Image (cartoon, rainbow, N blue to C red; front, top):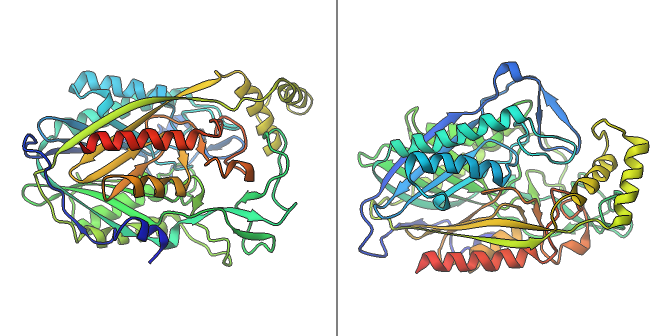
Length: 469
């Protein structure tokens, strides 16, 4: 049994949802999946996920915005996830506002998150990639459509949850390195680094991984009163698997597999949300390299999830609660000299084109970040679904943070959804910042103040306590 599993208090067992107050009525649920694949005439199209711009012209498999709406008669909530790398808060807020107008569900009761597939059109500028404005506008309407369609399907239902474990596809990708051997990149705000992401298989300069990862796969399952599967909302903490061109990556495969394994109809909605995968991916660098595909990862995770699914005890007596707050944090901005050097470098080496190298990307990021406000407002949420807790944060979060949130939560289990209700970059702990390495390097994708992580955890602890009362 792993340390993560012990911390989560026997999470591989059976869990039943039960009502904590007499006011909650019988559960109602609805689910929908809306195709958000870009039209063929928009190809080639830019995709997020790399240091430099990448354009693809082929669709490997479709993208979707998937939503589940749950109501206990007193409170209605939305759980929505879309096949996208990162989505800024402004886009999500606009989609939520449309959905609120159509359904009456308050935007504060809506959780919208990105899966973090690196094979979806860019809707938010990051590193060397700019947003595709056509797709951005397209996605706003599709997100709202997913929520409103799910809401229109509300009907009597039952729900339950379980937690399994899939250890083979989640490994910490940040390694502590021997002195002087970690990768260093200019314009990142770091001199010498101690940690390195993806250092290569069995690199002799590796010492150890910089922290733990969370191998648990947590799932909320919903079925109708005739016991026919409606939807699964799952959570796992690996970054992504990697898929060519336009693809939902392993997240999409997981949904298809859960439909097959549960015997769901074509209306079944299988959702995999991204957990705390900021420092984790599918690769174990302590071992020789092995080939794998996103299909293999999706099927393996679904297989472990289904083992847990078979233990679920369903109930229609499910109290629901929701809480939301905002938290304002400082931004790590470059100083005047760093900006001057970056501009000089860009003028000499890059000109008007997009970056073609990692140093060029970070020089551009230095200038772009310097033009942004010195503070950032983050949206945080907590939900209660029976005795299942959900905490959300708009960051790419380290495994240790997710494990700590779960351990401290009044709900057992709790699932932690990242890249939710916005995108505010990586969230290293204060202890990880001095180690350097990618995910701490200053840019739009990692710019929150050094003390951001404990402040966010404290705010989420308060929200979880609020929905538990």
